[in-house]
Image (cartoon, rainbow, N blue to C red; front, side, top):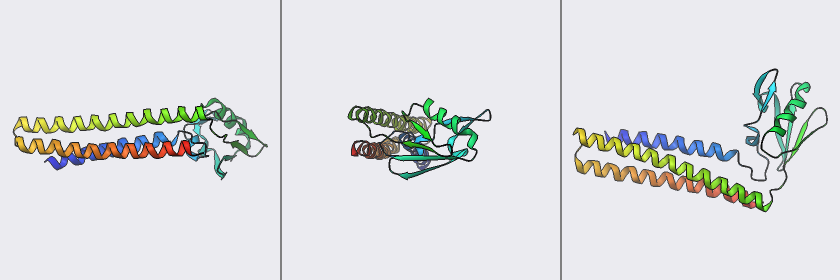
Length: 185
């Protein structure tokens, strides 16, 4: 019975970690990444459309993104969408391909990015701790209902704490890696 509580907590914590990783993909590191453009949508015939669904996006160099629209008439729309986004990128086009040079991050911008990563890290930890709280409440209600003995409830809470500690460490490791990427260049 407690195994179900542990398993549910692990699944939810895995989802929290996945959400954190997805959020961290959008943080600029000074290196070109396809995920940088994930949140950017262009007005494609009246429909907000992700850039990668209207064009071929590639990274020929570590600091360059190229976008080749399948329909040349949307080049201006793609440029507008990139300029409107808060990425701070300046696209240039030659009529067929849009090139985005990724400028190196300034020291101040790096520090801002590290602060953002730390904030996201803390949010990830809070999510994990909330899941721990829910699991502990489930265990307490099981004890109260007489489904499990008191000593099993304490062991269960200890196990939930161990699971939580493991996931908090994962959050720290993921964010430390991202900080290293940001400060690397």
